[in-house]
Length: 416
Image 1 (spheres, one colour):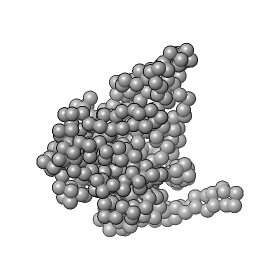
Image 2 (cartoon, helix red, strand yellow):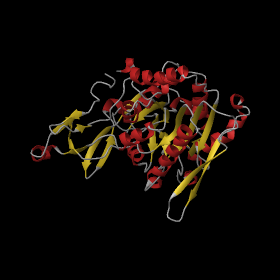
Image 3 (spheres, rainbow, N blue to C red):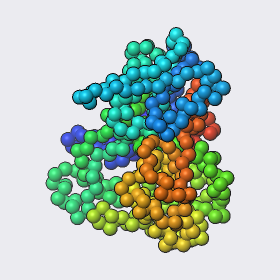
Image 4 (cartoon, rainbow, N blue to C red):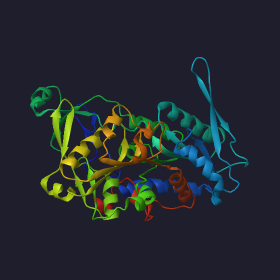
């Protein structure tokens, strides 16, 4: 079985697939499908050194940064990247044009590097991949995405109150999961649709900090290998010296007890204690966070460090701030991969108790970070993306490599 036990969808009485939680591919299955594509490439004499990098970035994001540093990389001496431009017509129809496809007669492999923020971006990269694969006949197309939209909706249930069980039982099945009750909700699973679309043009995907394990799971169903990778280790290396993360002064905090693979491995790597908040539902969609007594003792007098995949309104960090202050912590440092500040984020993040905010330029626009002053730091993901491409060209097995395996967002066999 390719999926982690307990993460498969249920089949209800109407034979609908009910996703109570995001499906997850086993570590061995993820590696197998990725290596199967590597075997196929070798059997077809695909030389990844004979490649081209196609840039689909916006000014200031990680992808556009990458195009500037490629010319200084010894591995890519004399190598030319490809860019695109769009022509938009009065009726809003549009065409995509490639600029400088290749100075070589033919390349074997193309890496399409993009920050896919909206459906228009998704359409653009698929047009580009289609052009390379079916017009130019390139044998292998790999997507390298600093951010991938359309990967949020990974469940098709909604939570109900215990008092509503009897009423909803008359309409359909009620499911109990982790102490809460759910019923089927007719939501379209956007991740599955996105993966199905991409599988028609791409041979492999490298996705930085995908929102859900379902990204890889639904891609697996389409025989599309996905490397779901978090840059947590690389980000820590960029600022560990400045932060002086030591076990005497710091503790890793999480807003709830849900699984956060990157946060857990980060704590183990640094040798730091980790604690989780207890979530209390206050009704009308509102929640509060607090610590158990034993965790309050661990937090008191310490500096909190939280790592997450993304941030938007900052409401989670605002609640975490309240819980930490109540437990006697000194301050909170927030590290996140995909920042896109919206809504009331400034109010939620304005407190000086949140002393540092560290994110990347995986997607733009990020928001008016200048309003945060010296508390905010943005790390360019461009070198990390380049490292991934170089490692792939050098035939690194990401699942076996001591460094990269720590950053793969899959449950390792010893963690199950």
